[in-house]
Length: 410
Ligand SMILES: [Zn+2]
Image 1 (cartoon, protein in one colour):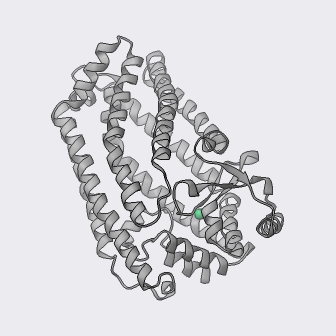
Image 2: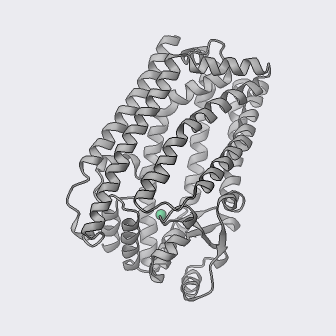
């Protein structure tokens, strides 16, 4: 392999991915004005429909702008020696390769995050604000940012240091040790994320006593799910958009319902959503996703071990002294077509699992309240009722509303 060849591979991948994403977004946007399927006629009234059209178009235009910005930024970095410059700063600070890597990634990640602040600020305080979704205050926005940085420094820094330490100690076999460590870390996070990380950002409380709790109690007892594991989170602190999710397994399993979901839906509808989430657990989707992500990490680390000692990967991004951290950046780009493909597969399974969870809710509870809740949630988030099938295939982790409703009514 020669460094110019690797450089052109990197260039080709970056541009091809940009074109693919742009074409997909364009195809999807062309369907914005398609007639709404008959089963979904009652989701929006005329005024809300107008608003949802405007929301889709605004997000589409904003997406085009941000993806062009990101592409130009990374190309400029590649062509004008950005990585070499950051590498020099890192080399001047310390002789130690772990510290060099921490400084190198620290500058790149902090730099790109700071450049992204105007975009996420605009998204939250202009777009989401204009359409009535935003509840985030500027203080929360700033504090969230600082907390996320602190977490990246602590967890990201520790993992990166350990990986390089494995590399120094075990050579290309580092991937086995890294894999074992990442697998344990992933399991730990899956189990304790709700207990350790979520409270840093949100308040979580058990369900309040009342008729909703009674209904949920009855349903949970019927399917053998412990009520202790159902929590309500204050999602309304940041947005009016509603959500619910399942996390963990074994003793640490839990369903989290957003307070916005509880405000937006009738009690039967909330139980139906909860039944759907419990369906994910009963059909073992959580375990499947966890196992798959651990296997995929192993595959990626193994391929990384084949490339890591190849100086051309560092040279191709313009860094003339090959190093683990420079090779990692080059590898990250070279590997992205593979992760696009594994992403497609994961989305495919995720959409299948959504039908399975819907079916579970339908058989153990009822289909109709789930149908009406899905319609309300779509309406309240101004979601797109006519996505392009190719766009769905690539990006959707949930089937389009019309398909889920047809399945529930079948
Ligand atoms: Zn689901």
